[in-house]
Image 1 (cartoon, rainbow, N blue to C red):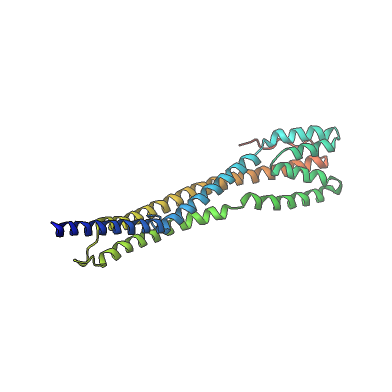
Image 2: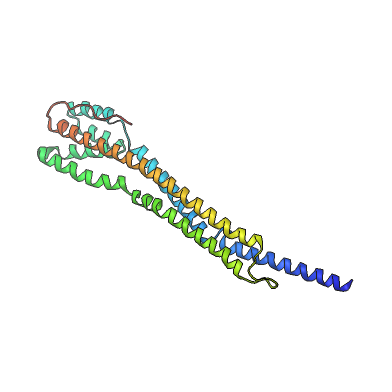
Amino acid sequence: MQFAMLLAAADATNAVAAVAASARQATATGGYGLVFWFLVLLCGVAIAVIAERVLLYRREQIDSAQFLAGVRNVIKRDNVLEALSICDATPGPVARMVKAAILARDGGRERIQESLEETGSQEVPRLEARLALIATLAQIGPLMGVLGTLLGFAGVFRELRRPDGSAFGYAAPGEMFDGLMQALYCAALGVGLAILCYAAYNYLVTRVNVLVADMERAGIEAVKLVSGDGNGGNGNGKS
């Protein structure tokens, strides 16, 4: 009886030690491996950058036709200060380009066009900022997922190679499942990151192209408006 109790106590001690070791491993690696949590971090970065870009483009996109009509009416009354105030109160690159044209009005058509080119060269890179990061995340996401998958399967084979005291070449199912879950979750998260970033990149590039087209049309109208060559046409409305 005492011998059986000693065996039971030993088994209980071994079970507690195994649970403690598993807990330490889960704490150290997050349960799914470091690659998985790195992918989670990349997903967080991607979501933050995409949200920031979407909010920026929504704020920068204006109804350029209505804006140009308002500036045109003020310019017809020779109220330059009010036109500049309208530009300052209106967000977006279109308003900043029109303001640059108004400020350069005394230099003639050539100076106006140079000012518009300078403003456009500053606005386009600001609109395209961080798009390269999203494209990079879309490319490395699947690669990181494959890396996590390989490391997960490597962990499974490592457990199979380690003797458990009585048999060689076997491992507890839980130890194998940890590696398999790491492999599958890393693959799924890497593919999901790529899908998100690819879709977001194409959408954001389309929004940038719309804003740049608005800037070009507004620049043409601003030259006509400020130089006095006709009343100017209508710009592109908000898309």
